[in-house]
Length: 372
Image 1 (cartoon, one colour):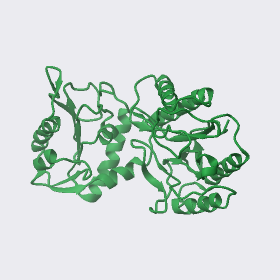
Image 2 (image 1 turned 45 degrees about the horizontal axis):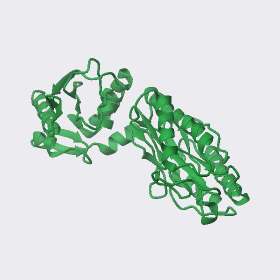
Image 3 (image 1 turned 120 degrees about the vertical axis):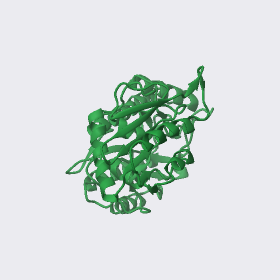
Image 4 (image 1 turned 60 degrees about the horizontal axis):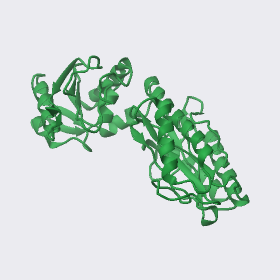
């Protein structure tokens, strides 16, 4: 992605800016400055890959700015676009952040008195903050994370595309996983399937591709008969991450104990589908699933139950007792019950992605759950 064309609907980006301005009014902020690729994309519609730096600003008065590397984009959900030189004679500059911040600072200096500015405390560098030294800086990260929970139609379209790519990946996996096949060969084939499904390079490649263990990257290792291959796939399409998981018996003949664990994990997903709706505490869903899984005939489970997905692979809400989140309409959540035990070689984790609707959840990943 190079920002040449909008990745999100520009009218929807403007709507997201309006929501942000409502927060700014509540917090008496004159401006918000964002520098992370995720928030630049969320508010302006544009994103560049890891080689380039961009920035954006939103003013309470209605003006907004996008700072682009090298060339101005033709369309963006801002009132002004400015550029800086990101390359000299095709060589990437190592001081892009300084150069982009100078452009941003010059623009802000011409916008009148700005006394209170929201910035991303987790990411905003000194290059930016020293140009705001006369202003009070406040952390805008929690507000942006809260706003990002409600997925707009343009965001859902990208999420659905990424999630559909995992369905194509599982179809390839089921056709090639067998005793002796190399984990790296599986990984390579699945990446090709995801690229073909998305029709372009991916933003991210995903999570777990190791066989016979709970997870991890692919290894130069053949799969063995009797093992279960947990595939936890998370390709990202234009910045938006899928996160689904399926389990495949390497030899196509799951044991009775593996089937018993599989039935229990599938039952946990059914339980979530019954319980999840706006207003329900995630802790309460976790407690119900925890009791269900650990009352099963084999295996144990003590990890998280899931999390929101979107511009990063883990975002609110958290289906985890370490947080006290409540489901909201518009959340997109990845739910991943699991059971682990050495007798299962090494366990099962099945993960679906759901959209929280007004009355419950919609399964965005209705792909086969079978072990073979």
